[in-house]
Amino acid sequence: MEKLIGVNPVTEALKNGKNIEYLEIFKGIKEDKLNEIKKLASKANIKIKYSDKREENSQGIIAYIENYDYYMEFGEFQEKLVREEKSVVLILDGIQDPRNFGALIRSAEAFGISGIIIPDRRAVDINETVVKTSTGAIEHVPIIKVTNLSQTMERLKKLDFWIYGAEADGAKYYYEEKYPNKTALVLGSEGFGIKNKIKENCDILIKIPMKGKINSLNVSVAGGILLSEISK
Image (cartoon, rainbow, N blue to C red; front, side, top):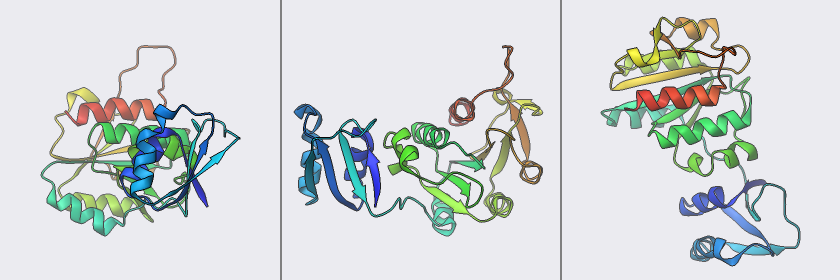
């Protein structure tokens, strides 16, 4: 059985009808933090168990679920994109750190991104850390796992998407581009960036100007900057 931990992730899971087996609440938590959670749990007939032990970083709230069932099939996602006049899709090429993944999900939700596409191999899966770091945003952003990113990018192009890759040696600064109604952004892994084959499938490579002595940004920070600009 998997766990959702923290007030916001558990609250959003309850609001969205996540299949929760039961809640575990630390006895020492302040009652005012529990009001909404208790109401939502009661409405859904979810049992609450109280514990004398508080798990680290849980804020005293844990929801137990069967599995992290957050993935959407690409075919279903494609139908969603066809109906949208404007869409921004985030493609993650091999992100390894669950905290970066969770932070990118949070940014994607904040900037109205239609969905996030990830590969089914050599990348972090949705886990407890990802869910907690997203602070509930994962309940509102479709995550699509695919076997081949290059083929998926080609399918997006057939839906009139322009695909931008974020690279330190990109041809344009990110703020110089006028992004079309159908835009996909590719972010590479923390250590190696975008793979060459994926990079070749990008229409334009963009970059963020650097003025400091350390010539790089954390991928979740870079993603937030770029998604903010693209979503304008």
